[in-house]
Image (cartoon, rainbow, N blue to C red):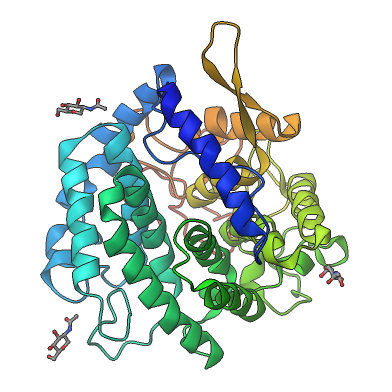
Length: 412
Ligand SMILES: *[C@@H]1O[C@H](CO)[C@@H](O)[C@H](O)[C@H]1NC(C)=O
Ligand SMILES: *[C@@H]1O[C@H](CO)[C@@H](O)[C@H](O)[C@H]1NC(C)=O
Ligand SMILES: *[C@@H]1O[C@H](CO)[C@@H](O)[C@H](O)[C@H]1NC(C)=O
């Protein structure tokens, strides 16, 4: 529970955001609470502590994708998987703060400092500083989410982070206009950058509204057109390995990307003002569950959409990203004063999304992790009683060890 005064200031800032929205970007329909405004209790707090004591809270101590020698030691702090450190950061910022874990808080602060101090003179952030590696935008997006959360929790960081982000946006805008920075994966994940641009627009526009809006539009028009991917005439109603993607974007049928795509349409609605975007997002959720759904609340995609056959798999990444997408865009809540004078959250979204998110949180997620959160599967299957080398391998695009628990079965 947060102090009442905090909620009062949040409600005031919501009204302020609406006024800003009149100038170009539609106001956010609902305000998100800043990191630290509420803290978990009960079961959720217990899970957070298990996670902190498990792999997530310790991998920076030894795992080369996110360990000190790798991202502090040279220009290549994200290692060969350039998004790995960025994803770690986005997750561990809230984990450290909500679990009040000093080691993790210090670690994420070091990560932020390192990235900002190594921003190059053009504005670029990330491992391609001073290398000849091609620059792709996507690996930076989760880093920006983590940085935003740090600012929300600690406003003293605002100037440093906001200045670096604006500098990066200016470079990214030029790159997008020149046809640079976008490869097949970036084309599917553009919405994450749009959300960061909207945060800047809402809270720290620094007279850059036109550039921010133009960058949002550039990202949308160089990216996968999710409003078409989720149109029923193009949507795959069976496992996809033998289908031709009619829109030509092969990675748009990748399960994790589809969960990302479901964040895209509500985010773009703020500048397209097109109701079809919202309708297609809702329709997309229904199509996914109708043709690829699972009783555990998730849908099947062992890389690409996998139909209803129970032996087919679902990636842990998909479980996590789809929960985020539902919570962010389908479960708006309001704060209400109850009869005892306390603020309580009331979810006002469609109950079918409450059901989905509960099924995922209580079934699909715990099923694919060991109880101590030290080990995980790459793919889960419904009613599969054996985690083992699968022969024959039921997964067309993943290895036969994908359902085995470990540090990095099939993929880091
Ligand atoms: C976090 O832990 C520190 C001590 O390590 C303590 O002083 C502080 O009150 C704690 N904060 C919260 C919000 O629990
Ligand atoms: C990039 O290389 C130049 C020349 O060696 C150096 O001066 C600069 O500090 C480097 N920039 C970063 C961010 O490492
Ligand atoms: C809204 O989006 C749909 C789907 O892309 C498109 O067909 C329609 O023309 C758009 N409407 C407007 C007013 O732009």
